[in-house]
Amino acid sequence: MLREECKALLDAFNKVTACYRHLVLTVGGTSDSQNLREELKKTRQKAQELAVANRNKLTSTLKDKSLSKDDKAEFERLWVIFSTCMDLLETDMRRALELGQEFPLNIPKKHLIQTGMSGGTSGVAARAMSVQNMKYDADRNIDVMDLKDLEEEIHQVDQMMYEMEMNINVPQWTVEAKQNLGAELKATVSAEASTPGLALVEERKAICDLSKLLAGVVFSAVLIIAIVLAVCVVKLS
Image 1 (tube, rainbow, N blue to C red):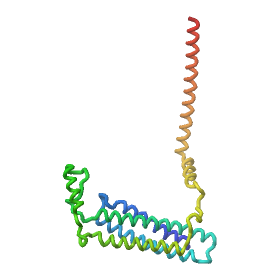
Image 2: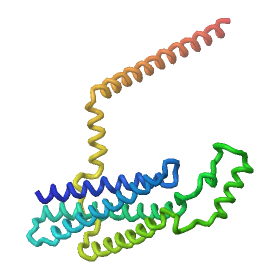
Image 3: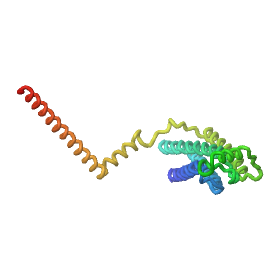
Image 4: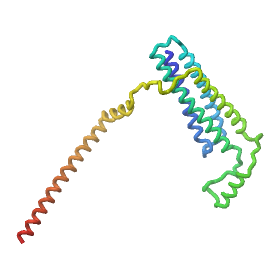
């Protein structure tokens, strides 16, 4: 029961961090908006809540001296997966901070650069200069407070990861994989080979190759006969 609980908690954390990464990649793009920034904030806060829950659960479990050898190995594997997800979350939070600083939302529409969509090159250059020379009012910038919060949260995540390493030291190379090397690839190949449609394709391919071989043999025989006949005609003449 404890294994399944930890796996479910880790799976939820993994899904939220993946969602957060997807949202971060859209910052500064055509779909960027205040709604996106709010969704980013909610998602990263949810990820941090799940991170704390995973850390507490796995830490208390791994410190249990009564764990069997198999259980300990399984929870250490989950711990490595959790640590990797934490690294990804911290990286994406830093990326979100950089993009948020580069692409503030309060730029007036008249100063946005329409890159090739409308206007001549002189108009685009003029708008670019306007953006470069603009000074943003921090009090009116809706992103300022959120970016400050994000900086603090990044620091908290870094501190959390440091404490995790100090409390539970599980080097990644000491954790054994649950599958043999290449097991997934072999399973995929086996599944494809067992597919009736693929088997039919392979059979047709074999027949096609045999037909090509026979055609080549016949062509070579005809060519040899033609050469022999030509030589005979030359000698007789």
